[in-house]
Length: 601
Image (tube, rainbow, N blue to C red; front, side, top):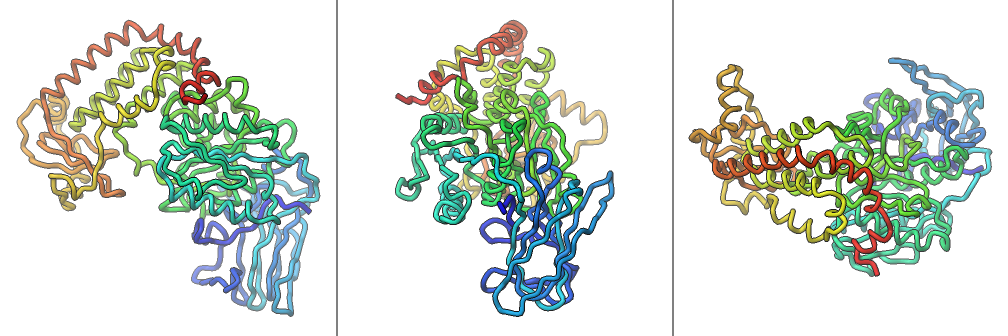
């Protein structure tokens, strides 16, 4: 019987959060046997109604043609195997028990036991429990189906990387061990990996193999790397029988089983859902049980992450995570779609980064399948401040909206841009304010300007003109932990006079300073923290890096003058530019454009 989902145990390669795999009574400590099995004491009940080991039967029945489902376990010892369902009903959970099977082995070797779920019960989550009657070692298992696969998918994994050698090599090692180098693995002959190296820093001998293909690429960001991958995959799509492209970030930790489940979904997908995207959730790399996003809504650029903050150790969160909405896109840390899709001039837009996945999803995604257990772990975004990113974020947001006919009114755009710029000015980050305005100016230059750009040279200019964080010990401004903590606790003055004074003087820029130094976080800093301060140390606690900004009334005046001129240009050109992107943005996603942009001859 074909396997549609494997049972997992915690692994140092991926995640050690036990409650994402199994739940045991409070105070019960389980250990791992020398051969990898889970040691369970006698008279103990272990539940497997978890993020990784529950089966989302409701979604499997909706999207695929699987038949009856059987649970298979391997163990050594004696235990009752109890099949169950968990169903979400409003704010409560309904639990159903199905078949109970006594499993016993008298030998020292593990044995396999199987039990079928009732076909009439297809709501919620299939799961199970083990009730031991004597010490037992559990060795995992699988959910299988009696249905024959409808098709044989073959996935091309498209990884774009820039100086993330450790992550990339670790993930390639995982995929080799689980699939490429295991002739008995179901995905052994169903996976090709395309690594697009924008930095040219990966050693070819450490990467390339029969099924791993390495391409050096211009440093034109994620959109350029993923576009190059799609182009290279397109060249061999028919000869290699590739059916789907799976796009993945380079700074993640892979769960190999996510790839297996993705392939199983594709093998059994109903004809109506053959063109569906399959998305992977993002979980935090530091707190690996916390979900950051599972599908997302564009909302004109005011992004809404699906099921943000869910604790995936919690059963209620697991069940709520399966409640479906209709997201606009899935981010490209893990997103699969048909390999034929990029053909016919249907490549990404040249955004460098930020927004390429959104735009591609809005343009192409009709259905998105999200499943518990299909996920990656990624560094949280609050640890990724970049002054240079300010150039791209608002620029790309406006281009994307214009291309899809969802642009905001002129007055709203001016207010949004002005708010971003003034926020940076109040923190004395004049370079970041200038990059925001440069992004707006380039947006107003229209499609022809973007068509003619050298994306690599433009990014180098952006990087040179943004703030460059350095290890705090290398700076001429000393770091003071007590001062940093005091700054974090700063609060806006409660009286109207001082709040109005701060506002009218651009956070004290036009007043003489009364503080010599403030230390603020790079991301999410409060403006009041630097009020009437001479020097600011912008600090990232995660990396230990920082950059220095200083109050400069003349620079602030120059920025405000530039903003005023920019607002006048917006009044004049906004409507025509919006129309230009609506009519001509398809030129930016053609194969001929990308060959020129990437210098592919």
